[in-house]
Image 1 (cartoon, rainbow, N blue to C red):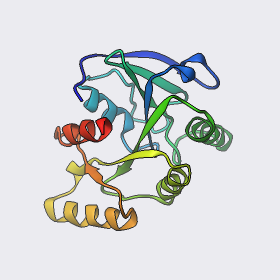
Image 2: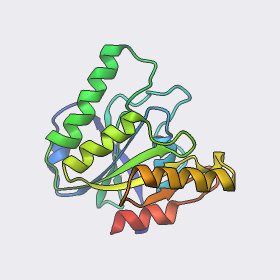
Image 3: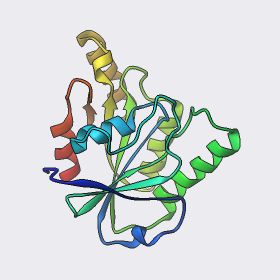
Image 4: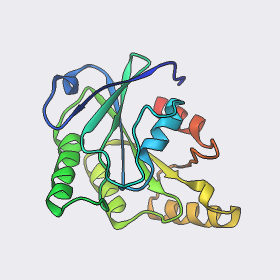
Length: 189
């Protein structure tokens, strides 16, 4: 897969006609502080298309980016830690689950983003369980791999693989420009 163009189309909080379009949707999901926005910008080869902030929990909508005028990258709010009220976190959680499990779209391939250093959290494992239970097509990315030395990297990736048997884990670092081609290849399969 080669990225030739990418543009923000819209953000939604509920039902919208964009959900019914006959286009592949590739949502990126993960914890609030896992670096989804930076990862998406890296994969799209753009600097600031997908907005990110220093404070976790910046994304409050489901944001659609039209890629190559053919399919969508979808930036979902993060789950877990965020400097938001309990009610707001619960509302975001319901929106994520609604989009992933209740809304029928033409085709969807989900990118589950993990923190390579921290490893999968209980919430990551629950998300994986739900995605598998709903038979969702899935790509798992271990982000921020640059924070680990070679020995730690090998140990962490093995530990993640043991927790997620049968799933290819793609190590990635937007900072060190590592993993982009592997992600694009996995998304095109």
